Length: 441
Image 1 (cartoon, rainbow, N blue to C red):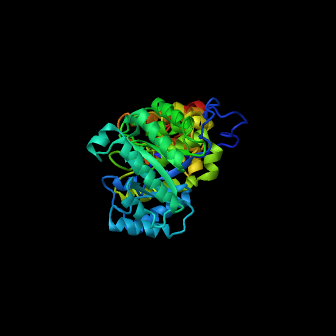
Image 2: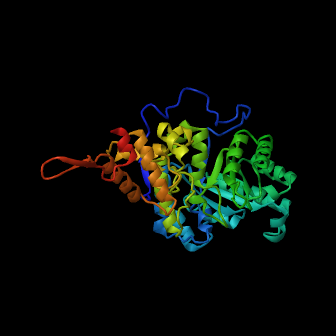
Image 3: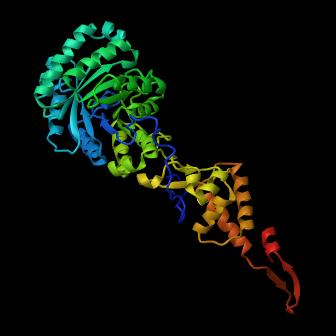
């Protein structure tokens, strides 16, 4: 942590929640909501491999898979085994680890892919095919009748092997609604574990997501779950994921740090930040939140990026408070300016007091940490000195501590009496004695 910050601990009796209804929880009118009953399909080892900087060795994939399993994700999705020979070998290796999380692989809606996938040892197969006019014309060139027949063939084959199966449209939000409903009703009728909707280009907004999810819930069987895959091109991925859960979707695809094609999908950490506010008991009991920082560091190093400064939870200033008004309130009760408790994630809150915006309450707290004794008025006076220097240049903790310590010496230095050789008082000289000292005397 930067040397301009001080660690803040939560005062006894503060931050404790009274018994009350969570105002950030699911809306009671959303009777299909899965906000308190969601699952994560973690796709760092599939979607994340499509990130521009990503190259995961087999050893690194295994390390990431184990870390995600320790965190508690429900599913780990792997790159299609037909993508390359090594992708298939890696898929088989991870399937042999005996992880608690179920292992999935993601394939095209094609029998050749399905025949390879079912032999790798995965617990389930995620099938996808583009349904928008863009993808039907410029990607695979197939019409909806072909897509339906192909989907039925692949799904029945995978089911015959006793594996979980998900069918997803690609580019769902730019697909014709009638086409979507028809294909989903078709695959639901023959039986799938999940249907998927994918905002492949990140064009959807939360209202569109909610409406589509609710519509799908009305046409598929209650035993079929909805999985959602949201890209973040327009910055709505996390909001869309939350809204999807409100509407009745149950599973959200994530990647560590949101890495993926272009600028990626829903970040695992950001989703945890949103969901712990809405369903705190569920999230804390299910996921090992204190592992999050280690997982993000692991993946960030693997793909050679820095964790963003404003990353939810683990960004270096996520729990740092600077303005004087904020610092005063945080020192009294952290809930005044924090919706997340850093301790839930193994993090620490800090007061950034080495700057011209600091307030005397923050400086008083630092004085106490240094085991020095100054009155409130003296703390205010030394704060003025700190702010004055902060107007001239950037400060660090050593600068502030030096000002505080020098001031403490000044106000506690006794007056010096100068006498002549006959031991008669000549005068009482105040050596650098500040106004605060004189007033106190």
